[in-house]
Image (cartoon, rainbow, N blue to C red; front, top):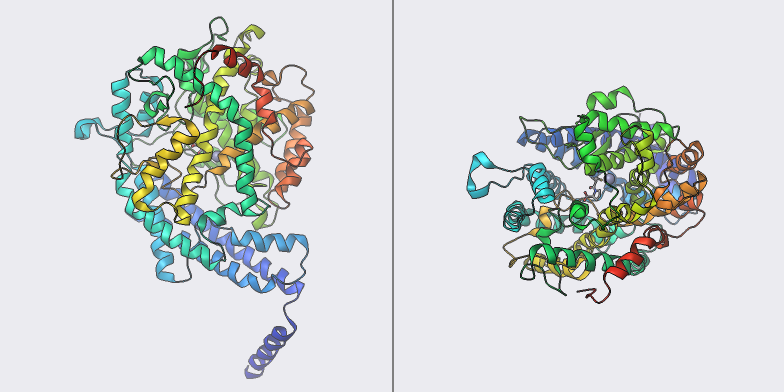
Length: 595
Ligand code: X8Z
Ligand code: ZN
C-alpha cells in the first residue's frame, strides 16, 4: 500500500518534469466529459422540475444541482490549463476551449460565492416565471404573461396598451439588486478563467477573436439597417394615422407600447392594420387553426411531421409523455418557450404554454428545431453536443418555419387554395414584421449586457443605458419617463434567466442563408419566399449532415457544408425581402425615414 503511494508520487513528479502528454490530455478530457455529462443531466432534471413547478424547494434543488455542475465545469477548465502549451490534435484543443465555455455563468472558486451565484440565478428565473400584473392591485384580476401577450397583440386601445405595458414592467424592479450581485459574482468567475469579464467570455464562443466577433456583428447590422429603416418608417407612418400625431411622432422613435408585442421585438401582430391594399393574402393561420379546433398537441404534430418529411426520425414517445404543452392551471411555471434534452441523448421535451395562433405555430417549429438538432448530435462527445455556434441552434427551427408557405399549408390541408403572386407583398410584409423588425432587438440586449458586465454601465445607469440602446438601434422609446427606479431589461425573460441573446440576431441572419441554400438543394425555382422544403429528402440530408456535426468543428465549416460559404452574410435576408423593400421605398417617398 505504502509502496503504491510512493510510486504514484514518483510518477506524478516525473510527469511534472517531463510535462503532460497528449495521452494524458485525452484521458483527462474523457474523465471530465463523463463526469460533466452526469452532473449536467442531474442539473437539467432539477431545472425541469423548477421550471414546470415553481416552489421554494424546486428552486433550491435546481440551484444546488446547477452549483455542482458549474463548480465542476470551472474546476476542469482550470485544470485543463496545464495542457494548453501542448501540441494537441484539433479535437482535444477544441474541447479544452469549449470546457471554459461549458457554462454561461462561471462560478468563482470560492464555494460560498458559487452557492450564492446559483441561488441568485434560480431565484431570478423563478421571479420572472411568477411575474404577474394585477390592475389596480386587485388580486382577482391578475394577468400572466400569456394574457399580457394576448392584450398587446390584439388591443388597439392606447390607454389599455400603455397600462398593461407599464404593469408588466413592474415585475422587474424587485429583481435589480439580485441581478447586479449576480453580475459581480459571475465576473469574478470569468476573470478566474482568464476572461476580462462575463461578456468577453460570451463573445469568445464564435471561433474567432472576441473583438473581431463584435465587429462582425456591426458589419451584419450595417448590412440590414437600410431595410429595417424602411420598415420602421412605414410602420411609424401607419401608426401615426391610427393613433394620431400626438401619440406618434413624425420623425422620432415609435412608442414601445404600440407595436403589438410587450417588448416591441416582433411586430407581426400589427399586420392587419398595415396590410397593403390589394395584396393581402386573405387568410389568417391563427383563425384557421381556431376554426378547425386544432389542439396544442396537434399543432406540435404538424411541426413533427415537417421534420419527418425531411427524413428525420419521429420524436420518441417520451417526448409526448414528458413535455409541457400548456399552462397548468394550478401552479406557477416558466412559460417562456424552451426545448430540452434532459439526458443529453434522447429525453427530448419542449416546455411551452401553447396558444392557438400563428405565432405559437412558428414557435413550435422553432423549439422542435432545437430538439432535432440535439438528437442529431447525440453521438458526439459531450463537449461537442451543442450547436456549431448558438446562433445555429436558434436558426434551425426558424429555417423550417420559413417553409410554412401558402403552398405548404395547402399541401397539409390547412388551406384550400394558395393566393397568387399578386399577394406576395402582403406575405412578405407579414414576415418582415416578424423577422426584420426583430433584428435590432436581437442585437441590443447583449450590447446592453456586455456594457453591464464590463462595468461601463453601472447599476444606477441600467435603465438609461437600456433606453439609449432601444432608441439607437430600434428607434423605439417609452411613452413615459423611465428612471432608475425601473429595471426594464428585467422584464425580458433572457435577462433574469441569463440566456445570451446575440444568438437570436445571428439566427435571423443565418436562417435566410440556410433557407436559400436548402431551397436551391430542393430545386425550388420560384421566388425564394414561396419555396418550401417540405418533403424534400435532399434538403433534409444536407441539413442533417450539418446538424450531426454539433460543435465538433468551427461553425465556418458547418456553414460551408450547407451553404458553400464560410461567412455569415445578410445578403440572403436582403434578397428575400427585396420586392418588399422596393415597395416600402416607394411608400415612404416624401416621408421621413430614420429617427
Ligand atoms: O426565446 C426564444 C425562443 C426560445 S429559445 C422561444 N426566442 C427569442 C425570444 O422569444 O425573445 C425566439 C425568438 C427570440
Ligand atoms: Zn430557441
